[in-house]
Image (cartoon, rainbow, N blue to C red):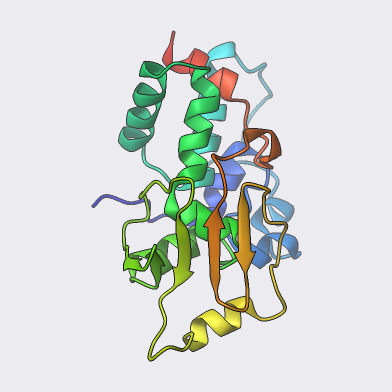
Amino acid sequence: MARYTDPKCRECRRIGEKLFLKGERCFTPRCAVERRKRPPGGPISRKRRSSDWSMRLKEKQKARYTYGILERQFRKYFDAAREKKGITGDLLLQTLESRLDNVVYRLSFADSRQQARQLVGHGHFTINGKSVSIPSYLVKKGDLVAWKQKNGNLPKLALTALEGGPKRAVPAWLTVDAAKGSGQVMSEPDISSTDTGIDMRLIVEFYSR
């Protein structure tokens, strides 16, 4: 499977803002956006006004980088959302939020979506008691996401992640039980509570041009 292998901090610098792709490091002075303000590449000779197309492209790339998705899969999500009844941008964002790696991140079981993707891929989580190792798996209302236990006990990796309770606010459409190392999907993702700051309208306009 193809995947992005360049430094994550370059993605933040391309967008020009923090996407919080490196977990706790993004909150420290070591953050690349704080240390190097300009985008990656050679020096820019002069500033230019961004065109409408470039603004839409930037927003689409911002969504891709935030959720760790390559272009082909992101386009498939968009095409599927466009075929459904409803607001395309909202449906697309709901799909992105429903990914298992994002849910693991939202439940504070991982410090970043990249780490969540790795944990899921290594088989550390179950859904409704069944092991699932596909980061792009889309959860549904009522699904129970839990750390895979060993001999009836949570692994040390889970205990470290759960120590001190959730590290960030858990959205209302999810509930977490830190003692059991599990979380449940209570409803479809509430896009009004997302904190990514992505303007889905621009993404719809980009693909509809």
